[in-house]
Length: 205
Image 1 (cartoon, rainbow, N blue to C red):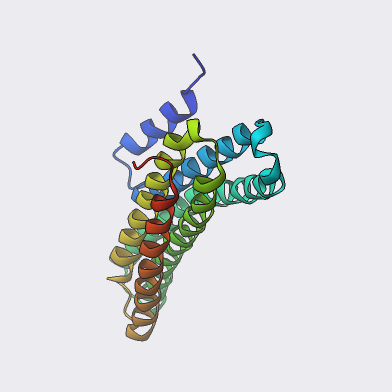
Image 2 (cartoon, one colour):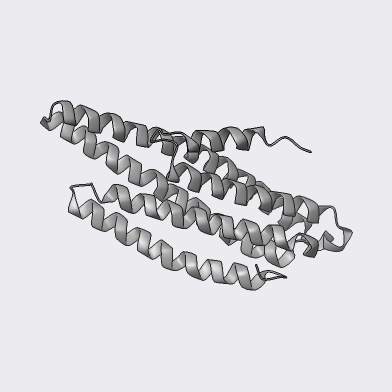
């Protein structure tokens, strides 16, 4: 049996009573796992002579999904770091509320909203590529593609929740409105992409 110690370690971190890593990191991790599964499906399909006409596209998709996986792994770490800054800034503001500590706290909250926004967009890109993998990927790996789509969906929606909770504490109404509208627009787009990806599957998850 292949080692799952990396996953065990990550789950142990999530299980701790510390504020990070938390939901934002978990969302990015879900997206990274989704991308990884799709890379695997591309690799499996590239071994099939029947798919020779799609080899060039499969290779491109595999490269793009590998980049998406790496980006999401970076965002997983960045999300944890961003929330640590929120905790530190909140403590500093509680000890002594000054203009400087309030600004630091607001800056940390905004950063903590921007990182999961990036995660959501990265998960959207994963599902966009999954739609094509679902079309040309090997039929025997359709369940893997389906799992990847659902994991990326969880990553997108989980990241969106983290954007909203952190924006709820941001005082700049214009910034909140702008980011909220952008998330809403991308959410509508995501649902259309998700529907397309699921339709393209050779089996429905």
